[in-house]
Length: 187
Image (cartoon, rainbow, N blue to C red; front, top):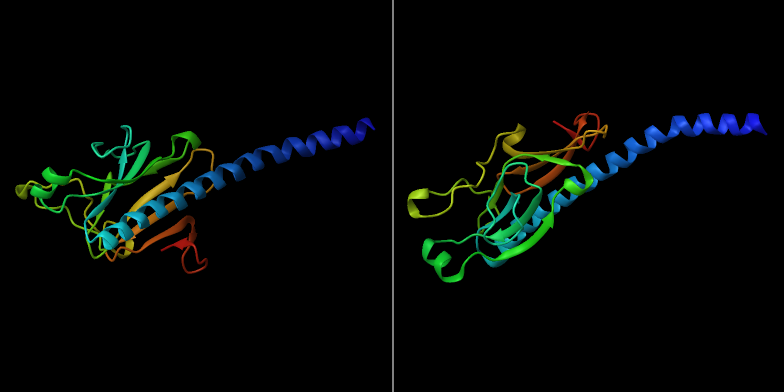
């Protein structure tokens, strides 16, 4: 009986670390999927309301007056004013606010804000001389002209890229896999 308990204890000691990494991978993938969903929501909202919308990382309490920051611990989706006059009249409407990643120790690395125009295309930074905010990321720094977020966690074995293309398409890929061999691999 002691031998059985000893063998069982050794097997359990070997399995626990890999179980912890698997849980970390699941949290990382889940946060990448939530991020992609929020980016898609910003795009769909822009098209549905025929008005520019943005996905934004922030460290402030998510609200219409929150400012965009890189590696923010919260995120939000909001409508952008289409003109300075409209901003003064209506303000900025909040669509969604969420705690980004800090609860699960997931790190988001990427632009502070991605904006979509009324056709659902990723917007270039607007002209600041017209009085519009300029925090939108420029389309296209990654392979295929995509703007990318890297979703990672220190104890996870996998990292994911969430890519936003100029056309507004959003996808997720696993950076540890190659696109030619795996469907969810990165190019």
